[in-house]
Image (cartoon, rainbow, N blue to C red; front, side):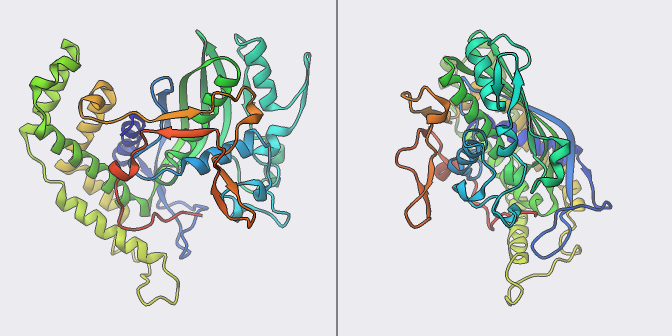
Length: 406
């Protein structure tokens, strides 16, 4: 597991507990069967990651970090809006007849402006400041340009960055207007953490803090059972590990204050046994039902959505009132507040390893490429690798493919 996992679960738990539903509102996104994709959301989530300590990739469920890094290079390195130059198909549905997403993302990065020091596009201006004037307070980029919105395939979700250099460390404050927490809760964090690593290396700095502000952090209605599955599965794992912990072996790994906190956590987890299995099984049954909603129309197994089968808003309110959720929430809050507990429980810390020979931002090579037949494959000359990413060992195996609201 990673620190990012606990931050992710803290966010999802907050949405479940405090979120406001848009059930009675008109919404743009729809599911594959044409049903409006309603959601529950909270306002203004700010998650902070220490990039000097780990690469913040969620291991609870699979994160396609290679495709995520490829997209960030497509935007900021290639400065492209051409989906044919992207080594994934994530933008295909938004492409126009020319195969571009219009004046969005990479197109905006490439636009040049005149400064006293010369003419620069957005990313080259940031690099110039990082190399020549790192104390500058206006290292800002912006992709949400109102005059061009009507010519964009999709309004930018992640749109604004402000860089800061403190004590030789490169920090980034990242603005995101909207985030689909289940489908993309790790994607953007991985991308912009990777961008910080790259810029730090090429500008003779060290990675520092990524502060990620999400204005509208939401969970779509059909994603709720998947979130419950992930949350309770992780809480169940921690409860099982804590049952086996020998406190005498923990003392030497922690300070006296940390050990007291861990002992209290140990007692809190073990004093009242909570059986997560019943709610886990119900969530997984719901997952299987949701999976059948997306089957082809002529499939005899396809379900047609009926709110009487799963009333997601009612289900969510019921879940957060259970002892299982309260226990899971306590576990998450404790783990977020005590980073040392990760190593005590045997969790490894993911690391992003860059090719140390790269000294120019434009020389980084994507983890993905197209072969001679146009098939997307791993790039053997990639500048990136991730260590201690143990999804296959630690990830939560969901019962159905997560549906995507479009």
